Amino acid sequence: MNKKEVSLFLGRSTRLVEQYVSEGKLGEVTYVRGKTGDQAEYNRLAVEKLKVELQSPNPSVDNTSPEEPYAEDLRGLLSILLEETRSQSVRTSEKLLLNINDCRLLTGLSDSSLKNAIKNGTLKAKIIGRAYKVRTYAVE
Image (cartoon, rainbow, N blue to C red; front, side, top):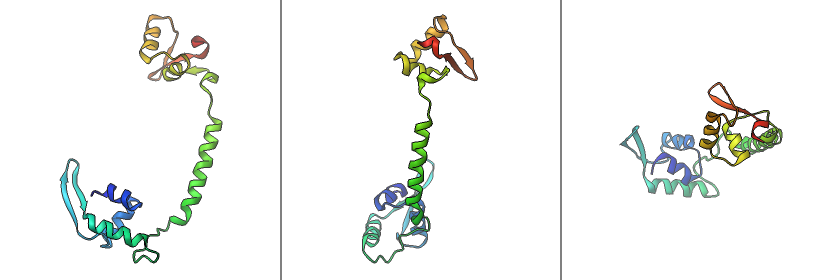
C-alpha cells in the first residue's frame, strides 16, 4: 500500500501517516523505485493492526491531532464562505463582457462555432489579454 492508500484506509491525513511512521507505529516501511523517485510501501498487516487500534475505545495510539477540535469550526466557516460567494456571483446574462465559455453557455453553440463566427465577422469580439471578449448584446 502506498501513503495515499494508507491514509484513505485509516481515514487520516497523509501527514498523520508520516507521523505514525516516524513514531514506528506502522512497522517496517520499504521503499520502491517509482517514476518520480522512491515510493514508500507499507505492510498491509501493520496498517490493518493500526486501524484496529485506532477504532478501539481506548486506543494505544493517540489519534487526535492539535487541529482536530477546530476542524468542525473550519468546516462551518468554509460552508458559510461558499454560500456567500454563490450568492454574490453574477449571472452570465448580467455580465457586460462575456468570454467564449459564457457565450457557449448562453447560446448552446460549441467553442469552435463561436470562434469561427468571430473570425468571419458575424460575431463582434475583441481580444483582451489572451481571450476573446464579446459584448452581451452581440450574443442575444
